[in-house]
Image (spheres, rainbow, N blue to C red):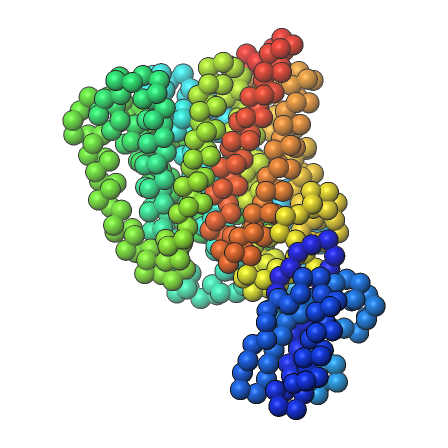
Length: 512
């Protein structure tokens, strides 16, 4: 039974015969209750032959009686003090050395970061295209659509990585069924979320222009978002499924390798498709058939995707309970889009660095969510927290300075931010201008923004994953969308604050 608090608590389940020892059992339970921090977790549960009580003992009692069972142990009558584990899995844990974790995280992280650098350069290039000038709401669509494909692909990676690490996808048939169901699920999610993102972008357009938003204008915006999201989900879903299976076959942990690749490719692929499709549709903006036809076709395909996804038991559960976190993520990302729509006009140089900051934070947080989910899946049943780490809201100092596996991974992910972001900052400047023109103040603020963002996201990931597990909600489906959306929002917001600071001292980085 999970508990939390400052002191370690043990849950002991004791079984008593109901006929001969009932009186002694009552006295024992009363004595135990006088020492319990919160009393009985559960009252006596009657069966035909025995009654069972689960008791919480405080740390003081545990230290005074070193021979008491550990958390989750069940004391059996007549066993001479022997015990069996309750709710905690006995399967051996596969631990990784520090060097292996660093190597498996840092190399894909660099690869993914270079993809984010490419996305930043692309955004800096396309922001002046005619379609972005004619449809300013496309800037509002960028964070939720990029985040959409990033976090949808990462939830796919998290689901499949957990299944692979638990040896549940060892046959070609199981791999094919899982891949097909997840592809259909991605199409469902991308269609619905793109519509919501377009709706939020149009709401901002109505607030800004009022009657200038016509039905054809709305259809153009929705067609651009739906087409980009659906095509990107199809391409990226097939690719990331292959990456997970190949990584496992090569002896690599997919949790470390696949998540950052998914995030970086999601940004670059979706931004490329959004810009290209929007430019192609711009010539049809006044057609009463073209852009409305794209919207109608996407809606007509939705029931088919729903049917295919509902046939598989794993994706069926996501269809039932997986929508709130994804829709909440779109809402959060859209607020990041509102900030981007303002900042990209105010600060010429912000678009060049925005995608790298947002994507890197989301990548590292996604890795952490995957690791936490796999850790909990191996240790305990859903709804139960591991006895050695049963606090749902972790202390930030304990999280980043603790000796547990969870804390060790958090420190590694936080430390790779500094060299990684310096490499990405240098690469961005060299590729954009052909020389390194970063001022010391901008470089310092850039790294500080990245560190603060990742620290916030890692803390949110640890708390959210543990709360979701406690609530019996699969973190693979619910945690990553919200965390990556929070990465978009915090990254855009913090970088905008940094540019305001640079503007106040007249730093040339403000103008690119």
